[in-house]
Length: 45
Length: 196
Image (cartoon, rainbow over all chains, first blue to last red; front, side, top):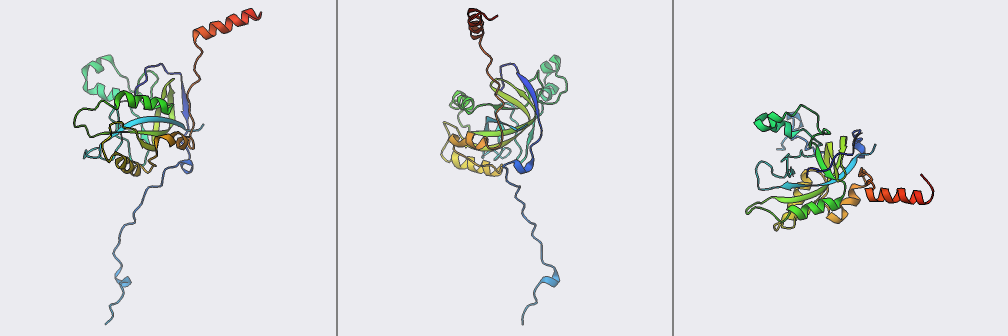
């Protein structure tokens, strides 16, 4: 895909604001954690 | 300034354990990162480390894209140019090559070296992908869907690629310079009208 023509000009574009970008936020999967002992419901007799 | 939009091609090979789901540049074989921007680097300089001929020519250390190099993340200004490239190389595929040709729009920023047919950018990130492979095997559309999902971008029909991309950036295609003949005609018409 390399260009065979000579460059016309150089420009500098600032980094776009993330909110203006269409990219979906990275999917974050919450880590599975074991329930604390005191959170484990007591087994009913 | 608004980020630049461009159109380009990649290869994707879902059967390759190394590149799986990753977009791969056609020439430089750069693997584009998932859900992040690609920061361009000069592969020619990297190649010069290993190749004596390039080392003899001397490739000074530079940030990509440099004016007098071919480095940077390439993209065409126009979708039509990308389609023409598909027609040029899409039908020639070695036997057993399982790669599919994926087209797409990219958003680019940072330093941009503008050429008449496209640009070379410091940073680029895919905006949307589409299947453009004329010899795509069965199931290629589903493969593009998987790649697009990995990059968190939509897989769209090529007809809607431009409309989608224009929502997020603009084209920096330079105005075509007038041809010498046109310039001469303009000067002649000025002389006829009595203008210098």
